[in-house]
Image (cartoon, rainbow, N blue to C red):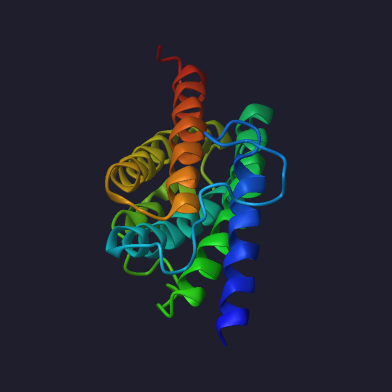
Length: 189
């Protein structure tokens, strides 16, 4: 049992390092963690981060999938594809952490605040003008990303699990850059 847990921790840590290798605070290429983190080296904040970020990322994936079909702008479609490419593996990594810690993995976005806004927006559901969809998607994704940055900032300040705080660094860096990009696409500086 202990060997299985260690194996899961090593796999999760390796995945987290791979995700942050291009800009995380520890981008060594040794293939092993340098922080010595184990499943026991986490705290309640690390659990809260993973359990909150998983449905948050799933919500972003739902929005990105819709943008892949409905967006008119190549820039919006490209952004949506990058969001999917980055966040789907992070969901898997965080799910692995929670399982190794013996904690529940959130199943859906149903209880996530703000997701009801996506369903109530006519641009998102009824296929009105594609340009209106693009603007609505960008505005909603900016707010969505701000929520992720807030969650990641709290993780950095209060978390103990090295791979989780490293992922939080990556979320902050990546999503702040995407917020800037989306504001430019909306004509905001």
